[in-house]
Image (cartoon, rainbow, N blue to C red; front, side, top):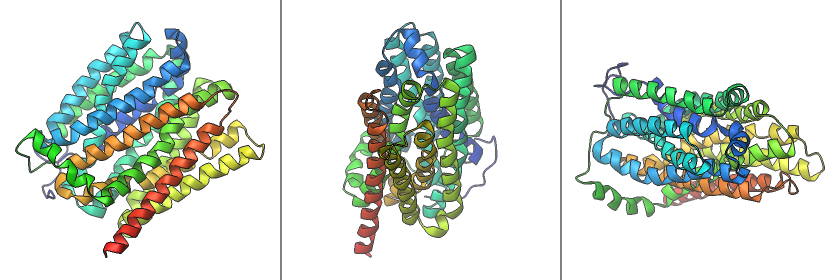
Length: 403
């Protein structure tokens, strides 16, 4: 059902303003990216191996995947607003726990609890699908994620500066303050958009088979999963490549992550501007092709003996650009398969995307050694991007066969 009521800012009786949706999607991205330049310093501070602290990425993603299986049905049953508010409150408590953690194990436990902020990212898409239909939803998601992409673009740089001058805990203090501010904004502006509620929570899970049996849903979901997988592989492996292979400091690492997010910003602008005109499937096709070509070029240059920090990082914005074109449209495609199950589709699709990302991030961290160089990471990213391209070709072929 599409909402027709007028949006009034800071009026919780109407649907939320687009700026609130952007911030709801931005804080989860910031929580994921902002601390990345600090991982080597955190490993030193807790006296553990880099691979242990790299779990702060993969475990966070794994918990996000699990939570999104619950977020969708819960929001379809109880509404978007209460689930988002509860998630924001828990995030604040978890972030304080990260700051005060005396050991790496306790930190990782609170870090996993921090993943509850993913409610904002997952349900901002469902809220949009409640408000507007089809291709218009893809366009609006593109604009939301374009605004959201500023946080991972600037977050790692800010995190690197904070780590350099104030220590890694300062990054989490900033995240906690932002969490408090977002919770207050959500309370004031986030009107309920879900107009139909299921009879029971279990009824929502019973509707998952309807999505599981849809080949189009799987095509869109796997295209998004593999596209994001290339980026998650980068999150898991790039700090090691930059620090151990190229001896980059935290600030330069932050800048390198920001370059990828800059590409994502441009890709989301293209989605917001052209998805309605070009169509969801073709936007995904172009996005996956760009990412695959960019990583393949970097890998080829490394094999030709031109491996360097510049060659490694210069092509990474193509992954961001491709994902910016792919993910908003793939998400809109998933949600449009069964519009009455938008919340469940958002949760299930998000779980597949982030769960796959967690596995890929963990794999990238485990494969890398100083001796192997950047080759395992580049191969993993190239493979993920190519599989994303194959999945959208399958969707296009499937739709042609049905037409």
